[in-house]
Image (tube, rainbow, N blue to C red; front, side, top):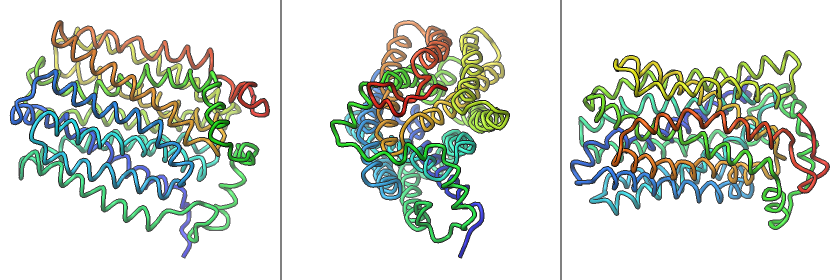
Length: 428
């Protein structure tokens, strides 16, 4: 049996995995008012529990990329999804702050792996011109998951309890593991891939030269990464910008509830924000692909998209200034669209920069900045809300992307510096 356009079916599987990732991740923030009341948790305890998740997420990013490079995308992604699904189901057994924090810590250990395995799949299955769209598609799954999560989780919790919501959503991930192991193979070995598409995938890789590199030893591998200023700059960019997304995921529902007076059932209206995020994920890939077809280099095209995003996210500072709830949603939609377009672009940018043989490890190192930034943000927001208000938080979110773009422009316009690997030094 041969399946035409199989690479897009593979992207669809990554899309589904990302949906499950965000349903499991956001269930806690959606049910936070109910859980806090039931378990008698303060806002500071809630912030600490979220930080447990982010701490594990940071460690997992650093380690999971190496797991991907060693085990390959198929086995590693199955391992990660199975792990986080069980951890999410166990969250329904929490009896207090400690057990809830422990289960969310376990969730974080698994969830980071989805975002180190997925770029590896894209690098293997997609030529450069399609990578932005593929990354945008699976990244869009996070926004779709965040859109579906309020509706699905609240519906399950209403029918059963908040504990049942965690168990049911966790079981969905275990079903996906079976589907993934059944359908996924590498393009070189997949029996359902047509000869024409196999040739398109293999000949369309712009990193064939990089693929010829022998796999380095552990010391050489980490020297290549740690001595590379582009890797550090991209890690810093993720550390600065991803907290905005975490803030909107973990704290915006609480802001709308405590400051704007929305009831828990009204928080389902956040689907509008995540639909805008969906548009951003896909739009970035199509715009970059169009620029590449017009003659721009892949990295140049992605930087242009990132610059546009950095010019849009500062509207975040207007959120506490407007009085109408509808205006809050509209501004949040603009910020979400700009950030997700940025995230698609910087993820594709990393795939363009890094040799495929070490992509998982390098991507994990860079993406660890995301979780580190989330930890700092979460604690800072918890402190600011307790001592002042949400207003300084929205102001801070306005400057993150412009600073991050400067880092990318200044330090990450070349693939690898001469200290890492002179053969890979190419301008772009």
